[in-house]
Image 1: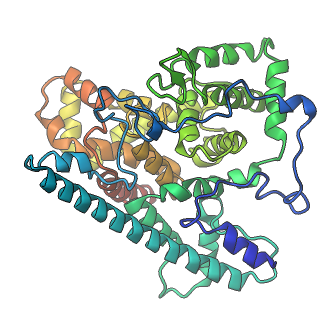
Image 2: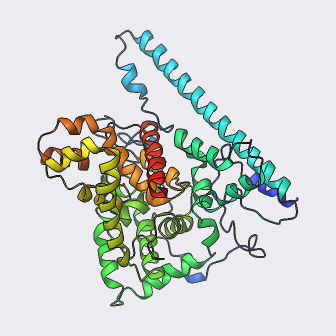
Amino acid sequence: MDSNHQNDSRYEWVRSTSSLKSGSRTPKGTEDAPIVPPLELVSMSQPGDSTILDPEELTNTDPYGFITENGSENPKRQPEDGSNFDARSSVSQVVNPIDSSYATLQEVGRRHDDEKQAIEARWNTFCNEVMKLRNERNQEETFVPTFGLKALELKTLDRQISFKEDSYLKRLQSLISKQGIPPGSRSKFWFELSGASNIRVPGEYNRLVELAKMHANDPSLIQSFNQIDLDLHRTMPSNVYFHNSTTSLPGPLHHRLKRILDAFVVLRSDIGYVQGMNKIVGNLLIADKRVTEEDTFWLFVSLIDEILPTYHGESYFSPSSLKHIRNAQTELAQVQFALLMPKLYAHLKQLDVQIEFITMNWWLSVFTDICNSMELWYRVIDNLLVSDKSEDFLKALSLGIFKHYEKKLLSLDNYDDVYVLMNRNATRNIGFRELMEITRELERKIGKMEKD
């Protein structure tokens, strides 16, 4: 089988629902070699760790494993396509007759399926076009990434096409902005666009996990390990994957979360563990339960080192980056906010609202704390992975949330109400498409302001 054929089967992004193969994207000569861990690593898993519950088989849980009360919808749930469309809320508006309700439910399901198929068709058309062009222009290459870190390969293709043709990068950004990455293909896109496929070293993760065990009492690491243990029990307490409320025992992803965080502390002892990392890794773990623990680790590393803003060569969560993140909040509030939403800015300053304080919390948690649905946070990551400049995207996203609530905020007359709205309910009524439309427009304006 030739290399182009191999690439074509590997990148059936939307149609394929298979998880990433262990060892994919490794250097030539090791890619197909089986990775056999040392005997002592075979028993690394904790009891019950390999059993992943299917929340659809449990009562009162949503597709991501969050417990709902009395069967009511959990605020973490949102349609997979990123829309605000809720079949149950639509059905509830129908008059009582059973036949009428059933017919409406069928129509709701049909429209949802039609839209989902149309989205997948658009993604398939785009991906197949990119793969065909890439293969035509790289016949002699043994391996060429389809998209590459932050879609850099698309930028390469764009330099080779006529100016009359649409930019492949812009088309990808538009697809993701309007529709997000299809959930069944998300892990594949994330692994490449994040750069995880470039840095993954087969067997290295297992080695780091073992080192974490060996150095559990290392004075330079013990503070991070202790904080991880504390935060593990605070991670998604209403999620069956992390906490079994029936037995009061850890859920099946609890130990995976600990191992990933411990391994990161060993790998990046210069950073250690920062509170909030548990939520980020937890979200990544339940995004696609077919993805291996090892690949989730490398995705997390790439997100921090390659995707989130870096400051003077230091990673986003490096201690030295904190002051730069604070400076970014000051610039966001006093420059971009003041110029792009002057009326709201003046009103919030009159109420003595510290805009920087609100947005700082959002940034340090990478928006995990305020995204009221898992799908919304995943769509945020989708867009972050293809943003031209990640800091501008985070600024635009922050401003976009304020923009959505502009009228509501202008009606408030005390800062307590502002803080409650923007900390607890900031994304409760925001749909993905609306938020990304606002964010992309603000991102363009921020980019233009910086050039000027």
